[in-house]
Amino acid sequence: MSDEDMGNCPKCRKPFVGAVEVMTTEIEGIATIVLEETTDRNWIQCDTCSLVICKGCCKDAGSGFCNDCLEEKAVPSQSAAAVFNRPIG
Image (cartoon, rainbow, N blue to C red; front, side, top):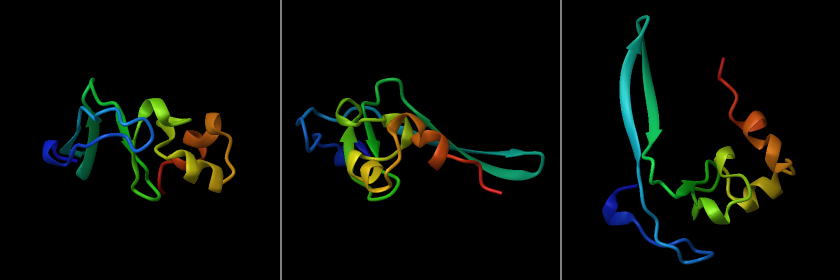
């Protein structure tokens, strides 16, 4: 999300700040993409529906999913990160 696209949380109307920085590197001959958030980032973009919502309005911001998608998957919020953010392969 670029600075031009930044808006407000659809729930609380708080302005979004911060960014996700994308870096590429090579580890043991394997191309790797690293996503790192700036320290002031106060929002997530849902991995399922792409809704952007502030972290304060999200039940489990660390999961990468908005509240509706967490409820739809019927996953308790404290375990959502463990269920959804598994390594591939």
